[in-house]
Image (cartoon, rainbow, N blue to C red; front, side):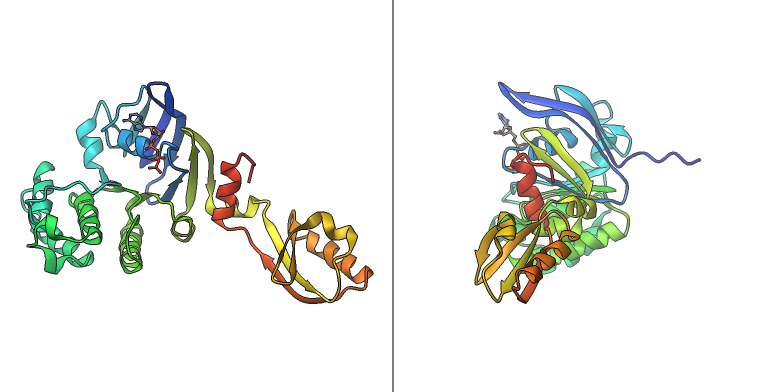
Length: 303
Ligand SMILES: Nc1ncnc2c1ncn2[C@@H]1O[C@H](COP(=O)(O)OP(=O)(O)OP(=O)(O)O)[C@@H](O)[C@H]1O
């Protein structure tokens, strides 16, 4: 049997900043080839966890491995296995884009990396900016360089911390096409984002953090399927029968929006309407989306 390590293994990681418990015994693993989302409201501990993963912040207890390498004891190999796109734009304003990428290659001891640098510049739409100084680039362009920089040593695991914050739609699209390509070629991707539609569209499994604790870790489809939020919006020929009023959530443009525990309850609702002699003029079932699941989880309810 071939031994396969997890791409990332986080074991009972805790971290305090003074009185604040930024991470509280967080444990989970990400498998090679996954497209994984790490979600949570501001202050949940996502950036702290990513810093610990990158060996930049030391957990008070617990351990983290990247491709089997402990990020503290085996820092160099762990760091080499990881590419991190940070939330902030960190760069030397006096270097050109190409110099920035060469410098980063040097950090990893890669002397002849020009072909890959050229490919990255091309794929990220930076080819004509290769000789521009970093300080002369727009925010979106700088963000692209951060992505190229994280990939310069071809890491098997890539972490993107809010990579599309403040980035225009076009760049978001092209960035995701590129990241999906990497993922299809076998790179493990971990993404934190505030755009839940992005996580919903791209990721397989989703971890939700709140106040330093892991609230949920689920396959996206399961998370959505388990969600209690199923709504049906109906336009009726007459008033909603009293028997259905406990289900009513709100009125929406002449339609009554009713809550269902699951879809099988729809039949019962239609039967009640028939019994009351009320006709259904229009009917729309609203499926759960990640946003509603997220809000529910963060407000303390189970999804
Ligand atoms: N160096 C630090 N010193 C003190 N407190 C810190 C430090 N870094 C983070 N914190 C605190 O730890 C908590 C977790 O912060 P963290 O940045 O990890 O959250 P986050 O989930 O990344 O939030 P965001 O979505 O806003 O980036 C926050 O309450 C934050 O104020």
